[in-house]
Length: 337
Ligand SMILES: NC(=O)c1ccc[n+]([C@@H]2O[C@H](COP(=O)([O-])OP(=O)(O)OC[C@H]3O[C@@H](n4cnc5c(N)ncnc54)[C@H](OP(=O)(O)O)[C@@H]3O)[C@@H](O)[C@H]2O)c1
Image (cartoon, rainbow, N blue to C red; front, side):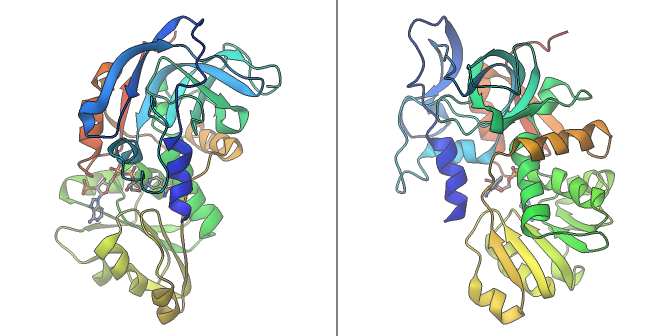
């Protein structure tokens, strides 16, 4: 299942390549599957980059729903994680050291990245990544804002642009428009020249409008299918009943992409539409393109709350509510001047 690639890429972040000779760093470490209480704030050896890797001093790390799913062992039946593990896929920071084969970055460069964590995760003072995972940090963003971008913005981009091929003048229905993925999806779709219908709860209706949604739906008060009809594309980040009811609002030949479930081929056939489940992948070129749209003020970043690294447990508890507005970010050190 495609979604699992995304999970496994993150799940095998381990501290195993860290060299004991390196000075210690603070990190959140998981030694066993469990609830948020298994997130331990510890001293661990700082990792050292291999030839094709970049070591980044992490200023801020984004928190994603999948971080808590992996921690809980939700995916252990498919493949077991290797402990100890440092969670976290989103970082913004400053390049500290590069391997001998790295050509795109040098020490001192400000970067943001979706790290697939074969070696070390983002909830730490230092993290490893490859050139393919990192891009120059947008100048107009703080590091906290930049850490809120990679996974969710790449997900929205790969869902709408790469997978559904959303084009100018088309109409897209975006479920969960106020969340991490949704806030970027609305703005990426608008930048493409699409008409956007977005859903969220009552408290987030103004946020949807502020991000540029043309039509907003309060899913607590109104059925989205009473408003959205014959749309070209649906982006589903909610699943279950929301996904089941979404097949019927897509025009014949249109596209539905879900981030949280297997697409139902029988439903696609029944409605004469296309569809896919998406698993986000790192892509430095796309991340750089998203960064440009941010610096051109076509996309803004919504961070609703920050927590210190030591309080990663509280941050994951908030994300697990499924009702986060924009993003939650761990602030690991002060913003460099
Ligand atoms: N497959 C992949 O590659 C991939 C990549 C990224 C994310 N994901 C998954 O996609 C999901 C969303 O991720 P995220 O980072 O955007 O999560 P998030 O930041 O927690 O956002 C969730 C949003 O969903 C909204 N929501 C909750 N119930 C809803 C409903 N019934 N109808 C419409 N909106 C509803 C909430 O808005 P209100 O507070 O207003 O209810 C909230 O803003 C997660 O399950 C995540 O794991 C998958």
